[in-house]
Length: 278
Image 1 (cartoon, one colour):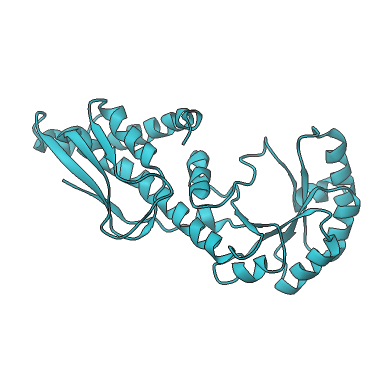
Image 2 (cartoon, rainbow, N blue to C red; image 1 turned 90 degrees about the horizontal axis):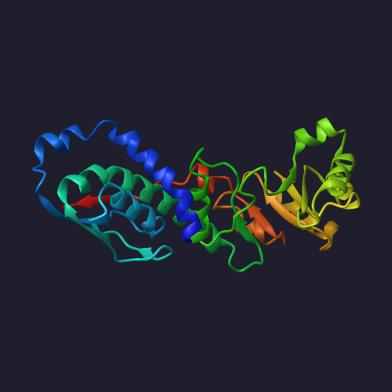
């Protein structure tokens, strides 16, 4: 994770600690001597792909800059059940107070990276790239999308501000695909591609003729996706979207589409079980 990204993550970590600690960790304050020291291990309880090690480090160092955080793996590394991911050494009370927040970040981020890697593996024999969506936890998008990259996937637009995607409701209000695409093309900076969502081959043809750079093929069958690839004939970037699963992603990729967007990467990835042992 770059320095710029870490600066963006800092307020997220700070809010998470404030949410959990409030006025203080009552249990730890009543049971643990302030002078007690500990050597804690962060241990995986399942196999996965590591993501978020620097976020976990930030949790502990934000509580106490004197704590020593020793990672044994880097983001992107695969681990098995029982792997010691990192050690945290120092004041026991501070480690206990940061435990849950650090594990919450790690478990979610590793879950996203792990699921993404599974999708990527299923399409590795094709040219298709696995990309994410904006279906992220509000406030955690930069972490969710970073985890997708760690898992071998790619990011779609990060927000409404950095990409043009004309969807069905835009088309309805604008008065049709052609008018929506032409309006966007006439006003958008030359550095931005214009993507439009279509539901059938007639709409695909209209989008191409209107000058779209990229087309999102929404909830199309395998047969229709194949026909769409033939119709487009390389004139636009084709993105398959909707109803993508681990079971059908390979067949979708084999149709020849360029991109496959999967909302499940960030809205349904199961957390990886990770714990801390003193």
